[in-house]
Image (tube, rainbow over all chains, first blue to last red; front, side, top):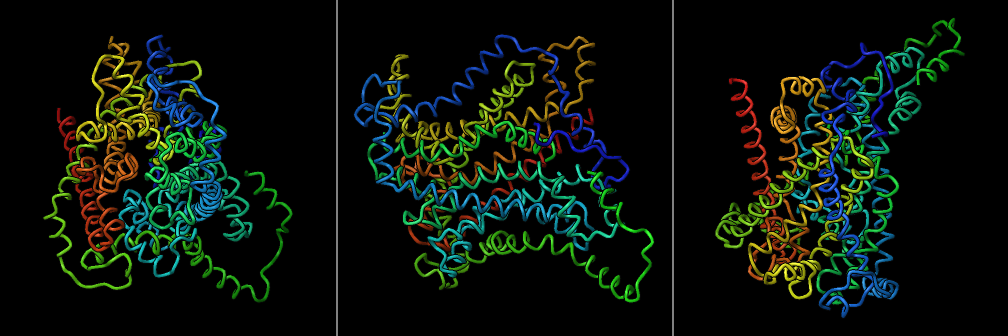
Length: 307
Length: 325
């Protein structure tokens, strides 16, 4: 919530016309809502507690299963507490599925995609929000129109393209297509329409600042919270991306998801080793979520109100 | 922020008159100012054209050719033969049916539960930031990780879920071979990952409903339940449409869950939970028929357009009906 909730105060008259006033006031109102004054009863807590239990149990179970042996898992009744084999299973999975290399590759891929996406989307979002140019409406419509179309559907020509470029099994085959985010452009545009007053740009123009100067010293500082939210969402999406990486890469140059696919593909039969791999592959993103979960929640909720 | 701007304006001498070559400079500057917006959208649109739009459109073209995985540079004209081959393949129809049934099995309970959870989350609660974050945790997990864990939990002989079912006194379920059972298992992974996300979207929608509406309803003596039906639901309609469309699109291209549930590209021994996405992968990367796979992708695209269109139409009709009342 905190990341996006408070757009800098600015006089209303300079707002661009394409943003209907009632929508803006709805956004402003964000905090007050339906049942905010009604307190939740014990039943609400009970149901929510149950929901949280279901959310969390698979994580707990991963830890339990990853720290036991295959024989333990085949016991009846099953043991519900963690066992002593965690390190041993980690060793096994590092050796058998090369999870170490996969983690490094995933970090490179997701990191590059995040940086590139945030940069491209802020540039384009700024142009769409505040600059006037011929074809702006049409290009924006094109961008938003394709936002809903799953990239999975273009996967065959994309594969032929990277095969032609001899990029199969190389990380750039996953990074470059990953930089295309129509959602990101739309997100940054909405953010800047709402939080960057036109007067500020006009004042800088009068002072003789070039557009590049304006972008660097006015737009970027204002856009930073939005860029942070987009960055977190992009990182998570890139880390978890599955379909394209398993096509473009193989076990020679895996990302975490490719390695997990290998693990689950019947190549390793030890269930506790598979769970150890799952745990290792999930930990980094859980870490990010643990640190920035509040901001991610806020980003998703704000995105929902705007979209 | 305005501070920075004024600070920059300050030291600039106000009396600088136009220099001798100022005319040309301004003209040049004006041209650049006209062109420069394109420089800002160029990085995105270059990538978008090369890796987004072009592959999407070229799929339709590829679907009319024979293209094999190993020799993806050679294309041989086939006309609509890829499509006729598709429509006479029994497994295409099975996977179309599965996509539909798994879509319904996963989307309907997911959105209904999300709506209920959002309603509860909208109360004044202790530790609500924690609850909101925790409920979104499954969304942060990858499809691969979630599916591997659920596949373990749904194990036929030693799975925890069958153990619990046994405790309650029922016979163990074969979650892999049964058509209905396996589809429920696959759907449950989707439900687990997305319910919290949708609940937060609904919560955001609920918070944007003006408070006065509830006060008015309360003054009219409406119960909490009636307030939910007559104030919350109508106010949420655009949000509900949004989540239905997003979930429909997600369900149409479902892939990772059925692939990793047993690690088989045909979605179980009798294709009992193979989806269109998986069928496309099987044709392209299992049997090496890229042309055929492109035809499947195009069918999925048309399907999505039709479903989303039908959705929008339905909503507009209902809205008109209600306005007429």
